[in-house]
Image (cartoon, rainbow, N blue to C red; front, side, top):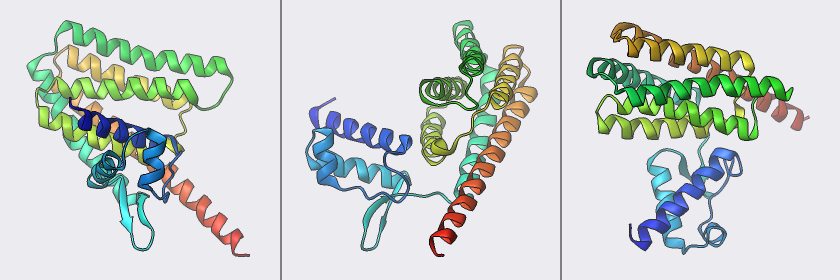
Length: 241
């Protein structure tokens, strides 16, 4: 990778992290010069990274303001999860037909158990919801589990679309995730059931369970979205009094 490509990737990854963490919240303006100074690159790779984020729908231009971090609508979230369901249910069925090598099955099983480990660590912490390192552990295990299943389908183009879709979902919802022990237990149950179905070659069950898992996640995201919308409406109302 040449220096310009490295600078672009560095700038892009930096912006994604800041948006996903909430350091650049929805509505925040992206200014090239301050970002370039912060990242330690010229303005060109920052401009290119912002352009890539715009192409992915993560940022957009607003008249008289510039480029800002996008705020998803309810319809955006539904469409993203519908795309995930279509891609992943097809992919897991194809992966089950093709068969998954033992080493990959072992890795998938470790990722399933990581969710259980995170749940136990959450209970031991005395906290009600995930945060910090535990949240990052869960997100990493969840993402890799779904990614490996999709890669096992053997369709590289689907893997690329999946990566962009999951990135959008993570950025749009990460700041409002309510991962309780009960939710982690539900995720663990779905992941274990999906993997068991894949391992025994039960294509219909693997596809059905994965579809139910994604539909359940969509319902959770919509509950969070609507709660955040109501909170914002209430804040705006109080601010106008």
